[in-house]
Image (cartoon, rainbow, N blue to C red; front, side, top):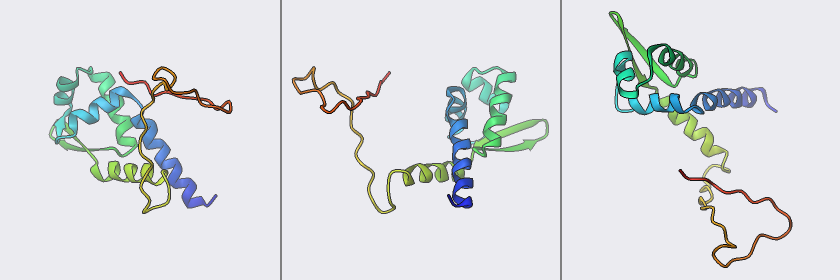
Length: 130
């Protein structure tokens, strides 16, 4: 594998690891509309200061948030460019550029609706919606 591609894939994996946590997603959701101080993020999310600082550190390392100090306060906002790059990297995994990704299929038990079970011993997976 080309060294540049391997590096890009590792960078994308780091970002995805940072995104793969509900508390970090909650923080990103809170600051999606604009810049907030740490205290405002704490108030909006209910995440206590020590845990919040730890999660913000992970988001900073993955370059998903930008921080700005003003006096004693630190303000955070999403790095929209980095998030857009991450979306583009995931979209690229769907197939060659210019090609539409395949439609998302809802998981439904076809045997319950009168259909037949898949043949050939293939595994069948379902998406769970909460």
